[in-house]
Length: 120
Length: 139
Image (cartoon, rainbow over all chains, first blue to last red; front, side, top):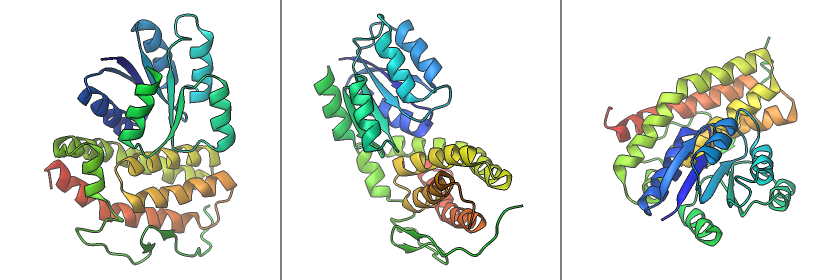
């Protein structure tokens, strides 16, 4: 069982991901913007993995990823990017910045679970 | 003042949106089987997601409409993107595509056909709302 932080401003996506992961026995925290997400990542150690949206209020997912990877408290947490709009260049960028996986919305449960298994 | 230049009907999943009056089992409006599959057969969870979507819907549509009226591309792009994401997650194809058309319009910086696009979204939502309400058990 892992502790997973889901950062997405979309309550439908957030609830869907959380339910999926809880159904697999994981403990899930949610945050609805980038600032909350960063705070939760630092406040709820040990977070084992983060599922991160790209387009959010309070800072983009890319910025958030950068901050996660720059902080000694969070830099080793694998981050799975879940995005509805990231292009190929953006995918390359976030992979270079340390994303463990980049998934497209709409969410495909098997893809997320496989990415999480691979990241943990 | 919004540009009301006639705009060709949007090509959305399953055909042209204008004039479409889908029935209860129409999967372009809502692919309920696909959604239930995504949630692992948990119809209660599917109903909860439908309720979350409905709870946020009026504010989202108001934001999109305000963005079009104010001709604010960044605001429209963000609002339409948010609705597209939620609708896509729910497997609500017509609303996903109609909001995607608005998002594309904003990304291109053009408001040409914006009123038509809003009407297309409204039409798609008119079909979707009762379907989702039924899933929540409140219809």
